[in-house]
Image (cartoon, rainbow, N blue to C red; front, side, top):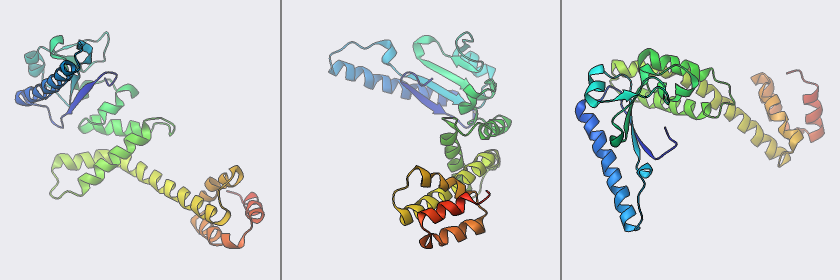
Length: 238
């Protein structure tokens, strides 16, 4: 979807006919800007240079699909992606119809109800080295925090908070761990200067200590030489 220039229009509830037309107006306003720029530069404009519009909706009725003349192209795209006539350069992604796999996870977290809940649970189960996991967890955690700050939450907003809770709790734990590692690194650098590989290797080891032992060790750094610290940690069982 993002391989070419495009516009994304996400909806929390299914868009109406008027909202669909408003999206199309914005798309063609952008097309107009692109065409005028090409004319100013005195160059020909390829059709592929004009952005595509992706409308993201949690659900969508058959009546709306038919009224828009939208069709699925299942040989190239997954179920739930409907394309308007080619000349309109627009597609609609019906999130609750998407197959539940990792390729669609990044869209399904924008769904509603059980679709969103299952997607968030899948996200928290991804391996920590997944390239997208950390960014998406942070975005969803921020979304939940922002919702909690609002007054007079609607039932739907309360549901979103519940759906996003696993992502928030996992991200909060990771923020806590990152903060602890940063603190330990800073204290070691303050005592010994720039850390070499040997001292850097102690950071995670110290972080695994019970909090009382870890605090005692860090408070006593000023009285320990490098050799004493290495010897002490080398004898500790983590």
